[in-house]
Amino acid sequence: MIPRESSQVRGETFLWAKDGYYLMDIHREAGVDFDYDVLIIGAGVGGHGAALQAVARGLRTAIVEYQEMGGTCINRGCIPSKALLAAAGTLRKLTHTEVFGISVGQVSFDRAKIADHAHQVVTKIRTDLTKSLDKLNVKTIHGKARLTSAQSVLIETAGGPLTVTAQDIIVATGSVPFVPPGIQVDGHTVFTSDEGVRLDWLPQHLCIIGSGYIGLEFSDVFTALGCQVTMIEALDRLLPGFDPDIARMAERVLIKPRGIQTHIKTLAKEIHPGSPVRIVLADGREMTADAVLVATGRIPLTRNLGLEELGLDLGRRGFIPVDDHMATPIPHLWAIGDATGKMMLAHTASAQGAVAVDNICGHPRTVDYQSIPAAVFTHPEIGMVGLTEPQAKEAGYEVATVRTYFGGNSKAIAQAETDGMCKLVYAKDTGVLLGAHILGPEASLLIAECAQAISERATVQRLAQVIHTHPTLSEVLEEAYKRASGV
Image (cartoon, rainbow, N blue to C red; front, side):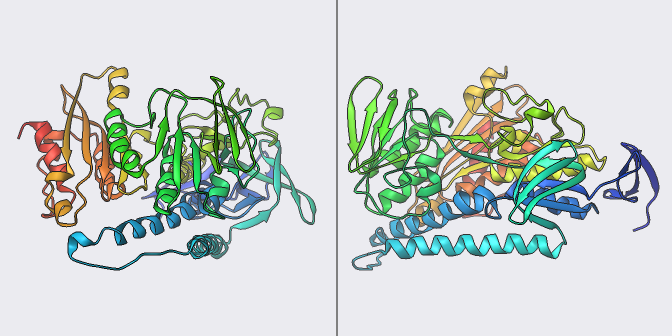
């Protein structure tokens, strides 16, 4: 491709090509040579996404990781949990085949083999991620990094300390499970999602602290494997982060039919590991369980990186402040992913990484958080994007909503998966789609259509004209668009 013109960004020369800026000269600042153009701290999904974009932009790139390549998502989060959920979903299907005239006899499972499958999946994907960086000549440095300036880090490696410099540094250190004060974790009888994905054993009675997406997914796994589950939520309703209508339906579909005992407005003040585990509630009552999963959210892994010494205020919660371009208040220092607290999802981190690199290269762009979807991989699934109904009202919109149900969808009826609903939230005056919330089969896939619509700020009137294949689950969206537009 022949460049058309050059431009100056931060004193560096770039060539403008049709699809973006490409670096022409090696980064130089006041005559200083740097080891790399970009150094990324953290090789999780966000750091990996940043590295791929940096290589695509022609930048000399290095990445530092002190634990396993792939970060939380691949090793202790998204990937192993989905492998466990796949096993749980298969079990559920095998025990409900009579409606199709199929008899499979007694269904059994091997916990160790399920756990081993998850481990093998993690190993493969981690290996693939590492190889993808190697093929692109991204320098991988194993060790713990600490910033000594906005453009240099000291890395404690197995071979000793190593100082590395870069024109720009991206912090992508992710997050860790939050364990509230008073809760003692031993990793066996009281554990977080980090240990839960290993599926080391199956407690007869598991108590889950928290009813967010982590707690909900683990409840799906453990109930499918025959465990009794109790769920304790400190707030006044279950699934507090979800749209209220979806939360109520999730309780009817995913919690009550599975015999899960729930306690809302209940705070676990102390938890003591043992056999049994002792749970002391804030009101003085005590409970016991064979095991407790602490699923009370996540906190950023940003302390002891040297950020405060550089003058960066992390606040009480520890999140790195960034602007819409992923830049911190310190020049040449950027941050992405869970460390920023913007939207703690792996695919958000990856998108932020690409955005940060483009801004480093003088190609300004931002992340459209409203159009980023999220999913809970229960059976059935939950998918969501944009604003909930309360959030839209709080934002000042005159809100309208519609609901459609899988019970009236031909494909859902054919496959005997009729539990669930689709809810659209839109502006009453303009018809612009503000949010979509789905509980039902394949909700994690269906929500992608809504994410694209929100990214385009599409109206329900225009979306009602989109033709969907019949018979498919996606027709619950077509019906919702038409109801919203009055068709």
